Amino acid sequence: MTGLKVLAACGLDAVFGDPRYLPHPVRVMGLAIGWYERMVLKYLSGTVSHLVAGVILAMGLPVLCFFGTQWIIGQAQDINVYVGHAVWILLGYTALAARDLADHAMRVYRALESGSLVEARQAVSLIVGRDTATLSEPEVVRATIETVAESSSDGVIAPLLYLALGGPPLALAYKAVNTLDSMIGHRTAPYRHFGWASARLDDLMNWVPARLSGLCIVLAAGIRLGTLNSAWKAFLRDGRKHLSPNSGWPEAAMAGALQVQVGGLNIYTGTPVERPKLGDPIKALHPSLIPMAVQVMAVASGVMLVILLLMMWEW
Image (cartoon, rainbow, N blue to C red; front, side, top):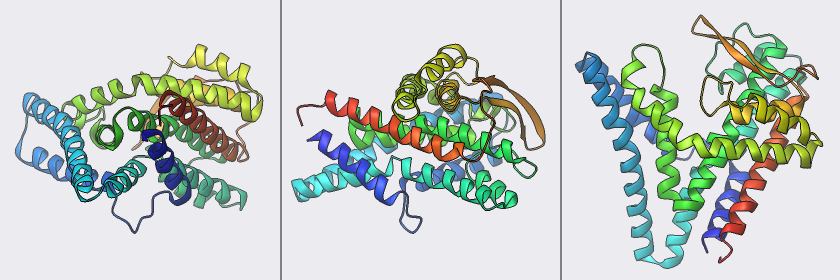
């Protein structure tokens, strides 16, 4: 039965994505993190205070999400077993972001195809952390490809894995960790100490999914593009080059799949940061690569789903 519920959750994500008019657990998490952050930065100072406050948040929010989700599903099951299944599926669906990722990437593509670099910069600014106001067309394409690759892991394959392993409670606990990292897991002040625990916990929870995501992208490259060899080569050679212990694996695999080179100079709030280069520049960074990256992401997600369903064969 779990396999059917996972499949149903994926189906809802594929059809509906993330309707902005509906409440979403991740947005609630973001509000809670923002409130806690403001209180800590306003009333606490010093390295130790920020470290302790950060550890409390990094451990407390995922635990709260896990047991809160478990309680909600339990209450639904007490009403009726089918209501319980429906709530399980709906909560599991909110942990997945494949459709939303594809929609954002395709907005960038459509803007570039229409000749509006300004609109493309605005669209890509919604999915990347770097400064986008002066990005050239190839840099917009690179930013989009990198985000699709990285988010294939933390937005799709990782929550899908955790959903299969522990249901919505574990999947939403993972999303809490991932949201914490994106909001406060930075190396710069004032988050260097306050966000340290969140960043390390995110590294831990993404260690296995990131590598599985890279492997799924390699398989998807062979299925969709016929570039399995170049994807595998880049995955093995460049996966560990990234500054992050996890992001490089799916990004390197995607670069090899598309036969392009990603990485290089990024600007964050005016500060230049040189990222390691992943993949080989066989092809130029052209807008047409964006839908190809989305297709690879979709196939890779499908590969992971099939593997998980086979593992849950008793459904």
